[in-house]
Amino acid sequence: MSKPISLISIFVLLNMGIGRMFQVSLGATCFSELTILAVTSFVFWTFSAQYIKVWAQNWEQKPVGKALVLQGGLGITATATNILVGQALVVFMMTVVFRCASPNFNLLHAGLTNNIAVNLFCYFALLFYFVNKEHNQKIDTPITPISGAKIQMEVSRNGSHFLLVPEEIRYIETSNNCIVLHTEKGVFVKYQSLSSLEKMLCPKTFKRVHRSYLVNMNFMDFHQKNSSGDGVLHLKNGDKIKFSRTYRKNLVEV
Image (cartoon, rainbow, N blue to C red; front, side, top):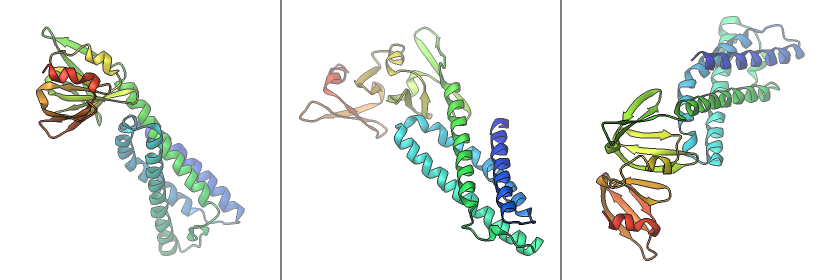
């Protein structure tokens, strides 16, 4: 957590510096509100970092465009919340405790644009730090053979590490440059191609039903074909997976 705290500290100090220049330009002599805003921002972003870390783990599961829109919305929401909380605290402390007038009493003051920009940069700095960290942790995760043909896979989620055996996997799907494993322990992401993992699994158990899906046939309930030859595969837990006519022969063989 030391790196996120360092990032937060840099942006808090940057915001204080810009705020001080704004105050000086107005000839203000009371700078207590800058300290209040700095402390508020530091506490806010330190607390929010744990949630940003969770959001970062879902980054690779969405197309880049959708991920940017989603994260942009979350960043704006977090920034607005931080500014509103800090502004309310400034008004309270300056009027009740310090009894000192402040340009920050006006929410729409000239320094607001810089405040928003710095907070947004802080959000995305934390986000991409966690995205990069998550990527480095998951890439080239070893798959270790055990007891003959069986294998076990090391996966991680929210900082916790798990060992999976193929029998626990319901199905696997591709998402951008990674694969998503849907298992009885939950959903996990691995930075590996679907084709390379398919070669390591038992071909009698795991069948390719679509170019983007690999299914454990032990979890299959039934499948429905449409007029084009494509269809939907129903799993015992209620999940539905589309299959293509190209791979329907794999279902017939089951």
